[in-house]
Image 1 (tube, rainbow, N blue to C red):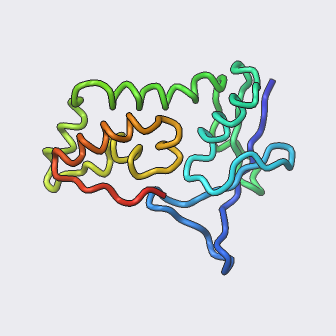
Image 2 (cartoon, rainbow, N blue to C red; image 1 turned 180 degrees about the vertical axis):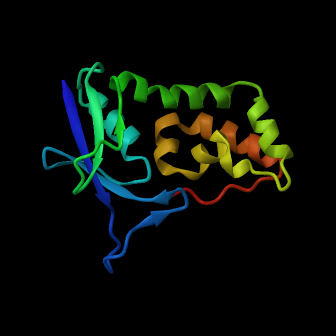
Length: 152
């Protein structure tokens, strides 16, 4: 089975495109029904929503931009899309990774690109991983002198 997610830019009240600190925000629909709203990651967010609703994990998910006949993203099955949160959790609960250290040692440091910063600064990821993961990620960031932005 294949589901096609059609995404369009989320709009501000004045009609302009909506953005967060993570980038442009999108709304997504499948067969005209709203699946996700105001997310910077519509493909992954839609996969999580659909899996939570009981869709078969082997279902292929395709994302297209509104008005386009071309696929922007394709999965071989939603079970692979959902793996991102498992990887994020593993990185946060493990000792500091080499990738984190490399980002810290850059001039200037780029801890804003770490999974820890993504989790702490995103309401979506905070909810997905829970308060203990957020606490650990915040502690690691503070230990390196990084002050996370307010979550959006």
